[in-house]
Each structure stands twice: as structure tokens, then as C-alpha cells.
Image (tube, rainbow, N blue to C red; front, side, top):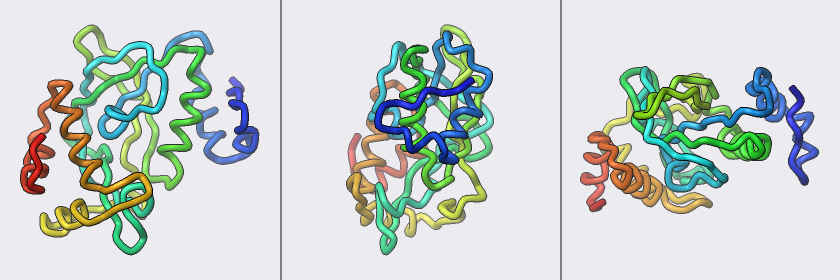
Length: 203
């Protein structure tokens, strides 16, 4: 399948990112709707049109504040932290259904948003929903990336979240907004809740 390039994005056709989108959609028939699993800021700021939204669980991975951000939520001098899906446990999040007609544009936009640094590995995984399981695109943590933040003590993690600011805003806002979005959807992430309380914020 050849993925159509949205207007204004012709230069992406020869890039590694565009080829990755083509590879991911190689078996898609162009007629079926597709699903995307959100576990962080995509929940409260998806940035794309969706047809249906369901609470969903992905097994084998857990939400973790485990990626350094040197741009969106921090700077090279004072990096912030953003969420990734790391191995082990399970993760409750939101699955968005993307209409077939919107898939090319939405997936190109997702690639530009999520795949710039190589911090994520896109995979098709089963997302368990109350209605029925669906196959969804999930951006997993790439442990081999240079942004992987592992073994942080609580003081270092809390200081990074409190103090880092990037061109998308403060890291603190990102973490608190994610916690609020999860709670608004009835999702209980006790680790994140405990972190937000340590940061001195109500949600």
C-alpha cells in the first residue's frame, strides 16, 4: 500500500518517518477504521479527529515517567520527563477509533509528533475494551534510545517535573493534566496519583 502524503508534506515521502508509516500500514486495506491507544497527553490533547473513544487496557506494559524531554517539556540544560510505556504490568488508557478516510493524515501527524527522536517503538497490540478487544497502534518505550530515564531517585524525578519548562509548557502542567485526564475517565493510576500528591497538587 502506498500511503498518500497530505498536502504540504510532500517532503516527507523520502524520509525515514514516512517509510515507517508505510511499513506499519502495509497490510491495511484502506477501508477499515483503525485504533490508536493513548496513555499520556494523547488522552487530553489527541490533536486528531476520532470517531469513537473507549477505555482500554494494554497488558504487558505500564505507564512510566521515564523519558527525558529536552524540547517540549524541558530544555537541554534542564530536561523534563514525559511518559512512555515500559515493560511489565498493564496500562489503562483510552483507545481512539480513526475513520478510514482520516487514517493517512492522522498517522502522518502522529509520526511527526511521536517519532522524531526515536524514543518510541510503534506496535500493533490488543487493546482490551469492555465492548470487545480491538487491535490498536501503541507507542511503546524504546529502551535503547538516549532519552530513556531509568533508576531515578524520587528527589531527582520530582525536581525535574517541578522545574523543567519546554516550548510546549511546564513539565508540571503535563504531569498534572495527564493525572486529571485519567481521573476524569475513571482510570485509577495510583503511582501517578502518589506522584502528583508529592508535587503538592490536587487533581
